[in-house]
Image (tube, rainbow over all chains, first blue to last red; front, side, top):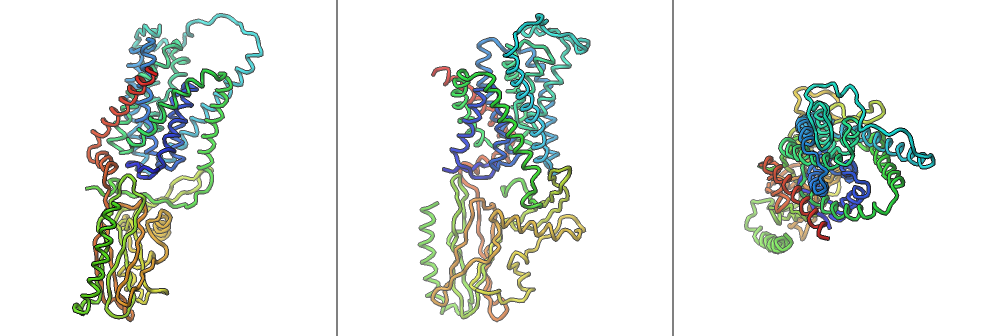
Length: 311
Length: 252
């Protein structure tokens, strides 16, 4: 059964899209990641134009973040103050990102930039995950121990001005750092169609020194608003948000995520992480491969009339 | 769509028969042509359709049918290898490019017309006229123009070979024109020509409208005409879906 995607302007098999949503949802349930960084490249492999894959990705992330943040909210794992400060940066970052996106689109380079950025990010994430799981395999052979760590290390960051107290995170730090992190991840959300949790979470732990229990909830909380901002700007400036595609994806996604969470509880952590690392690296190599092999036709055509014949 | 098509088909056959009977009276008219339906509705489940162009001719000669889609502006970009990867580099824009183009004829060999007439009526992909947007076109723009045709053929919007027009009982002719699923929307013209002894002795132009209809079209219009509302709606729908998903699975 085929359905016509009105913004992507292509006909797709409805079960393929539902299955893809379920598959990525399952992975995000198992690994506890947003899945945007897998969904967007998969849509591009299907032939969805890269800008539409990105715009729609941002839209779909709102749903999965809302669903996720509610669970964390009930457990009291959301630091609203920190979330709002991150969000401040995120708003500016994602808005700037959409304008960069529009400019690249007019230059005919948006596809390339999206693909290259994915290569860099998937390469780094996949590589780090692989390294981390190999290290933890090695660690299981060694006895544990060592001196007890401090709550967090003090460094140059603590000398910055505009300090603010974050009770839930047990931090007293300058707001410049979280604003910069939010800003950077906001740009990623706009250009790559990802929530950015995979960058945000490590940055919150290692750069800000936040306690791990509030990190995921707080990250999800601010991703909702940043991806909403990106969706709004993508829709108004670039017309690249396909609601029909987003709905199909999240329908499959929520079901898949539920099964994934149950399955993830049964699997062993390190093995699972190696599998995800392999998957991420495989997607990365596929994008590199597509960029390196000579295209079928060196010339490509791009209709300039974006309205597609409506008055 | 299906029901409308069959009634139109019945009407069309009747119409053709009526014309065949009437033609001796209208002896001055060398060519009469029409299409079975003037509106193609691209709906959510649209998988392409077939149009029937039909009519009658006086005397001998070859029938040529030229279908032109709406004119559009197209940017052609050439990829070059930079540091191992293929990157869009040079770009040439053309205007007046028909979004869809198809030719069908009764002639089995080449059409018996001088080159000037073929170019005037734009018969054959080599005779399509499009202008570069940039004032002075470089000598390389020919390659870019060829790329337009090649890419259009690949996506099924142009046909490389002429389609068939069948003659029926001497005077009647008919031709099935395949409209693909990814057909561009807009106003089309179907030009039917009668060629005798190296010149065009009769011509008739019929309009054809290809419109997006149904839910998908509304979404598309909304996204382009009321982009802000569309964006807000997209956000609310996704947020609501998140709430519903969380609620449903908490109950399970």
